[in-house]
Image (cartoon, rainbow, N blue to C red; front, side):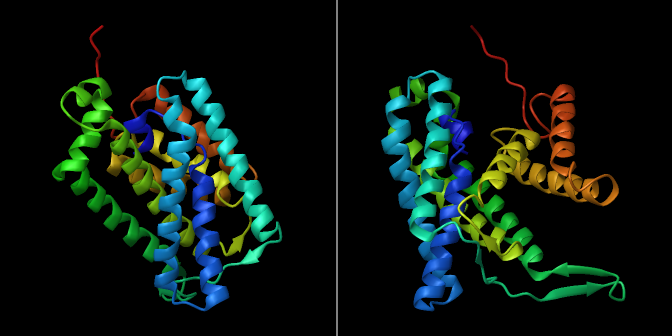
Amino acid sequence: MVYGIAKMLNFAHGDVIMVGAYACFFVVTRYELPAVLGVLIAMAVCTLLGVFIERLAYKPLRSAPSLAVLITAIGISYFLQNAAQLLWTSNPKVFRSVVGDASLKLFGGRLSVSVSALVTVAVCIIIMIGLTWFTGKTKMGKAMRACSEDKGAAQLMGINVNATISMTFAIGSALAAIAGVLLCSAYPTLMPTTGSMPGIKAFTAAVFGGIGSIPGAMLGGILLGIIEIFGKAYISTQLSDAIVFVVLIVVLLVKPAGLLGKHVQEKV
């Protein structure tokens, strides 16, 4: 959503995922709050953090070259990692799954699927449907689509571009908190660098599925996950990440707009 609307590569998004996981971990372990309330607090923290980052770091760079925005995003990423290290130390922390550790046995026990994986898929489907409805039916969603098409024309039509982009960051950051909690429910070790690789893979999934397509982002994420698992099982665990990016390059060579992306011609 952020890249499709603001045309900014927010590489700090993975670190917002990490902050969401830490926020949920902190309130649940320190104050012994219910997991659902911990997730809601983490969403609120990440929403405020996302809006603050956008106003402080990205808003002054609206008309700046893409390279300046990219360097700023990398700087924000390192800042969040080091801030988390100062607040919570670099020692690994064991994140207690918010959905439990049970698993579903299929085919006489030959196939085991964890409940956290099923919950993750279900939550992703609900979020995808909700975002698709939001961007297609609501006034703010249509404003986001208009800003994605042409910010200048949208502003001339009375749309507050700055408020729209801030709302996009807020929504994306709130969803990052959910991603962080679900990620640490599946992989319970939590560190300040937890969000680095998932953040890169999330952007890769969006490119794979098609930038600007919400169903495409989900499809790209699922396919990349399947490719990574089969790469680990049949080729090499050390080369699994490389295999994912090789497949991405091949797909972009064949279909540059991504699997569900649309090739748009611009008149100049």
